[in-house]
Image 1 (cartoon, rainbow, N blue to C red):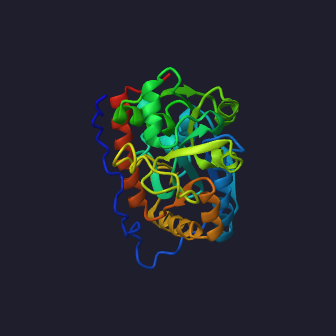
Image 2 (cartoon, rainbow, N blue to C red; image 1 turned 135 degrees about the vertical axis):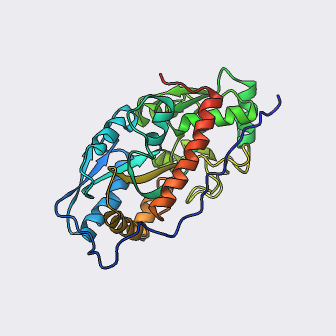
Image 3 (spheres, one colour; image 1 turned 135 degrees about the horizontal axis):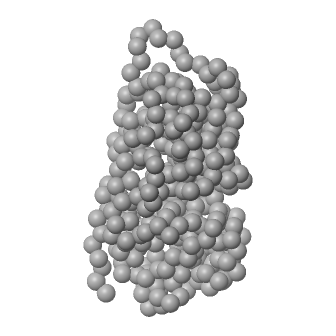
Length: 326
């Protein structure tokens, strides 16, 4: 079968060096009350654990507690609409994931993820992983996986923890680029997904190492291929899509921090500086690495440019694969 040509736009954007312009002699901003950390997922997940690595340290540096507020549901739309209504005074942070940017590409939302929020910082890149149940695996490499999926389309099911997430894009991209016929199986969360994958009901799954890590160590799950151009932290033997079956692919998920629209530059500058310092902490780096994530940092402008570029890559995959809302 001929390989279909798939355009993978370069998502790497040069990091800008300038921060928001601050008037000379203007006093440094300091919070005057506890800061809300608005979280678009339910308590107890991997993003919750990682968020606390940053928020606890941020509270210490700012002299005010940072208090998490959970607003899960609707592909981050509930949290997004709540954040948009908060005062633009630096006391509300929004810990966003890739879903926040993907949701408007598939569903109707009342927000634009780039235009309706103040960009603060790109926190981390998350290398997603396509992995297999070890006991039922019939392939050793991404290339062998593609060959098997072509020959066994009725068996090539891939478990995904949600509809419209990065996992669905990865599956669609592999199909478009290689002619494989991987078939997504959508679950309502990572826990029920892993129950079926470990039980052998579904042979493959896409998630981050935050979900797979303990099962990889126990030998129950075998990582086959990673989504980004860089290898997984701690798993250099796992090949990437880019170097195997989809040249040019860079389809990582990410964590970012954003705020309500209209936050003044001096507030943005202070928070950006503090978080850049926090994510250089070795304990923070190690904590994120266990989930397959690499710290990024940089300026608000760099975050906006990188996320915008990747969103366009995602938009093309969604259009080419005809991904629709449920």
